[in-house]
Image 1 (tube, one colour):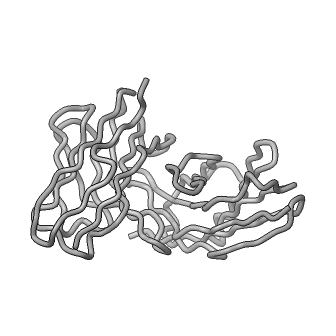
Image 2 (tube, rainbow over the protein chains, first blue to last red):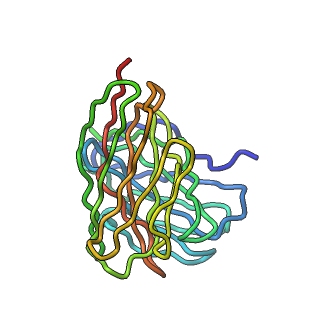
Length: 112
Length: 111
């Protein structure tokens, strides 16, 4: 099993450009999450999903959109990238809230 | 919403010493408290968790204690080793909500 995978691993964007980050899991987990990690700020939840076709806002949702069309995939979109969105993005999945979250390897995004 | 405070932000210990990291939470309805470890350049991984119906849980050299009255929980690492050097995150959640993480503690174990 691959677990949780993320595509791409690195990306550089110019201000105003758009992009989509893909997260895939092969563990049949219902819950999926997107976090951003910035120095000294910990892991902040952007959006999450409790099942196929559902999404919910986390702590820092502004400037991001998500979609969960298939149970195994969770997409994070940036419609108009800003330098403040420079960060490392982690995807995670779990059976439910009270179960272990399995994280992907992360995507390092730089917006210039 | 829930707010999780974590202290200290950095912690340096000598190999063999104990390390303690403390977290406080704001929502008294929170009932699930996991701890994640993130080694440099790696992804976070769960090391131990505790639910609100338990006051303490141990797994070899690590233990977590929970004080629901005071709304705080702590991670204890005994006999620290250089491979314990990492960033540790606490988190909290309640029924129907996602985890909220603390800002992390960088633990350095010197030999």
